[in-house]
Image 1 (tube, one colour):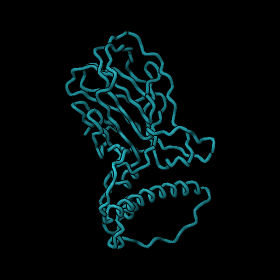
Image 2: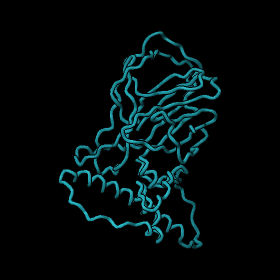
Image 3: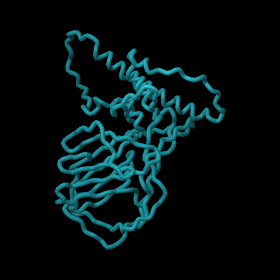
Image 4: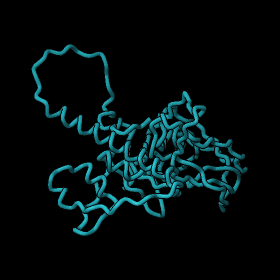
Length: 304
C-alpha cells in the first residue's frame, strides 16, 4: 500500500509493481516516513495521489539531497515521475545503484551526505497555475553521487543514479504557479537500503527457515539473529576450501567489508538488548536540557 497522509498518497514502483513499505511512522502532523528495499541496477518511478482531486499543488522530489523534479499538479487524482527531465521529449530514468567506495584520500569530503539513501516528496499548495503553451527549457544537470572514501562507513549502501537518456512522447509545458504557500502541507520520506541490510537491522522480516537439506540466501543472517543451540541442527559440513584465482581478491575484500558491517550492526543490537536486561537502581536524576527527537529511537543503521 502507498503511504497515506490525510488523503494524499505517495509510493515507488519498480518492475511494474509497487515497492512494499516497512516501519511506517508519522514523524509529525504533516510528515510520514518508511523504509523500502532497493535493488541495484533497477529503474523505478515515483507516484503521488490526491483522493479528493480538488486542489492544485507543487510537487518537489529530492533524491539523496538533490532536487531532481518540480512539477505542477492540477486537481487530478494522481501523478507520476519516471525520471529526471533533460530537455523537451527527453529524460533520464531513476536507477538504484551501488555506491562506489575508494581509498583515494582526495575523495574525502567535508560534505556529510545526511540524505544519502533518502527519497523525499513534498506537496505545497498553490491557488492556481497559468499555463504557457511553450516547452520547458532544458534542465540544469543534477550531479551524480561520485565515489566516496571507504572511511565514510557507507559500505553496502545504494544511491540514486540516472540512466541513459530516453525519449518520451509528451510535451513538458511551462506552468507558472500563482499564490504558492510558504510551507509544504505533506512530506513523504522513503529511506531505501538493500534488502540484506534491512533484514540485518530487523526492519524487514527474515525469510522462512528452509526445509532440511535446502539452503537459502537468508541462512547467513538467520545464523546471526538466532544463535540458539537448536540452530546447530541445520549446520552442514563445509567442503574443503578451494584456492581462488588472484583476480577475485577484490570481490573477496568487498564481501568481507559487507559482512563486517553486518556484524557491527548485530553487535550493537546485542549490546542494547543486554543493557535493557540489566537491573535498574533508583537514582535521583536531574532534568536534562538535552532533547533527542523521538524519530531517532529506531535508527540503528548508519543513515548518514
